[in-house]
Amino acid sequence: MCEAYKAYFGMPVGDQDKPWAPHFTCEHCKKTLEVPHCPELLVPTPPDRATPPSEESSRSDTQEDVEDHDFSSCADEERKPYYPNQKDLNDLIRDLGLTKSNAELLTSRLKQWNLLDESVQVTGQRKRHQVFSTFFSHQDGLCFCNNVAGLFEAIGITCNPNEWRLFIDSSCKSLKAVLLHNGNKYPSLPVAHSVHLKEEYTSVKMLLGALKYDEYGWEVIGDFKMVSFLMGLQGGFTKYPFFICLWDSRDTKAHYHRRDWPQWTEFTVGKNNVNWEPLVDPRKVLMPPLQIKLGLIKQFVRALDKESRAFNYLQDLFPKMSEAKIKAGVFVGPQIKNIIECSEFPKKLNRKERAAWNSFVAVVRGFLGYHKD
Image 1 (spheres, helix red, strand yellow):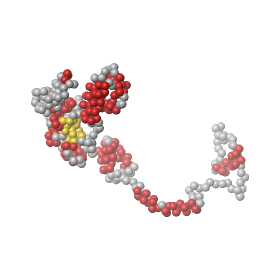
Image 2: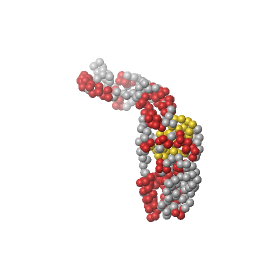
Image 3: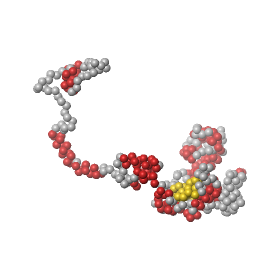
Image 4: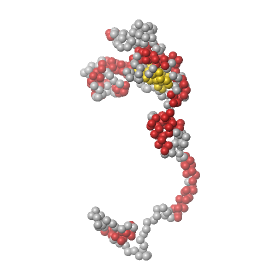
């Protein structure tokens, strides 16, 4: 049996002295392998896989190769690899938003694998900031763009101030200004930033002067605090906090009854809470839609009965929010969107509350804008 195994498989039966090795054979294998062989009945050998099984198959393969020669040559030309150049690589790095170190690592690996054009330099990303660094300056703790028109020309965008708006945001830690395209066709362009200037009127005045705002005259947008700086109004809870009309914030009885308020025609320093000269034309100031939306939802939720089904539904809708925040009506943009899209919330309101809610939804979708553009 062992000799037959060696003859058929070309290797001896081993490890018979080990306890884990099998020491028995099945009856079928024994009868099959114990076949008497002689010079007329040789031991069969398996065919070589490298050689074709017959002459017919080899002829057919050769004929198919000749017929498909034109197709294979065309396919080879179409599948010819493309090696990106420096411009293609820069576009890829910009789309991925890679830092200098990560971009250099990616370039190095692609260069190592011979997947880039020979003209691509691994160290090219180290100096990528030098292309636009000449358009920025640093003075008095403020980094700003000293030539906005030149920056637009270097990027390849037409500098049309009517197509862009200036967004200014400030906090206790930073002050920044960004140009936003009307319609979001182009990405935002940061034009000023500071981590040293305080959140005050003089800082905003310095920023606008550094950007040469009088030369371009963009429309300006920001939160209500920034709007107060732009119009030179006094901060805090003042009597006339709004620059469009003389809305009296302390006349609470007339807030929900009086519709017509006198228009604010002049900004005189020392009158009607005006402390400084306005920095921009009031007609160039855009109202912040998000801030208006936050204020309206705050007033609506605060007016709800805290024992009503609608208020309890808000608690169930946002279980991670504290009860104090819900009572104060402190919601963010995505949460307001969830409430508006919820079909069950209006069913929990009474008749007057439902009418007020429908008016709020109409203002959000029709006036404030329901989309990013």
